[in-house]
Image 1 (cartoon, rainbow, N blue to C red):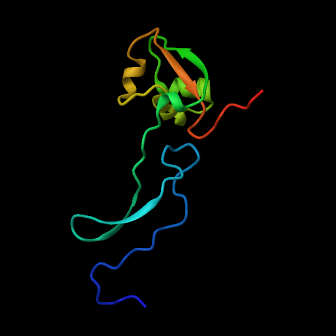
Image 2 (image 1 turned 180 degrees about the horizontal axis):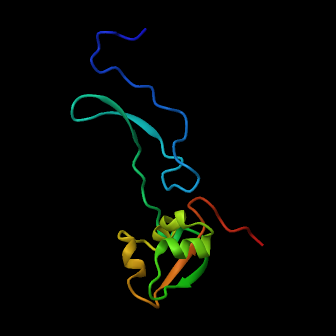
Image 3 (image 1 turned 45 degrees about the vertical axis):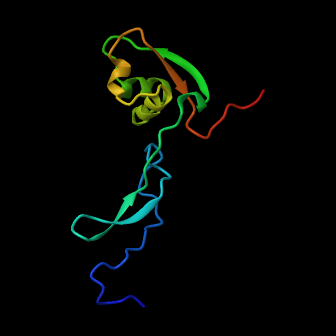
Length: 119
């Protein structure tokens, strides 16, 4: 039975997945925490960036003048919301750097944990 006098009761951590299939946060754990005012809250666990070389490369695309990662993601990966996969595949801490210069090749990879079929 919960202590009704406890000013900071533990929140149950939701088991629902609040992020859609296109989110880079999909599958991350939700964790209880306490904010600066002492309130119990739920936060998303830290996302560690994958090593680009560990991602299975399926192709490359060359940046054109005026390109943006969301446009390239829509054309090459099928959805603009996967722009972050291009950033991960190319080791970008600043995604805007990837399209700053026309002619730059970008790696296209499978998501982390997926591998190419052997054939």
